[in-house]
Image (cartoon, rainbow, N blue to C red):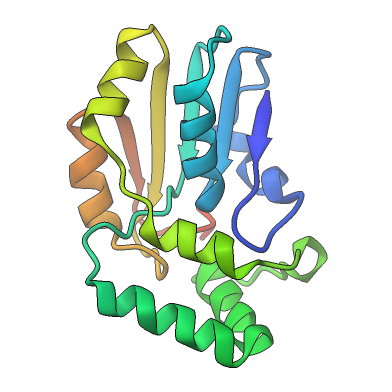
Length: 170
């Protein structure tokens, strides 16, 4: 299995063990990593049977002012921004993500916030024979999981983990 990390994280895939498939023909990603995993599969000619999207970053329903504001806060105080971000990622669970902290770059944050999931591309991946599973937390403080659920559930196997947050923990 190939795994792609979330923004400002490295090695956090252990949190998602119940959702992951260790097959060599699986790609998985968390949050920003879900976007990267999808694009990797979309551009790849390799045999991939399953794509697992864990709390995929989904901001296409946000206004451009939201993106500008997030980037401005990041530029003003990177450390404080990341700390608040990680607090929101772990909610409602009490998890210490500091061992998994990696330096998040502005370019990555901008890519994460600006990314647009395209129905056409998802359909192309499905037509190539890949199965797509999406897991969302009902108590997510990073994305609007109800809007993400509406978008993904029309195209993919999508599960809303009712009492979980972005990290899919309780």
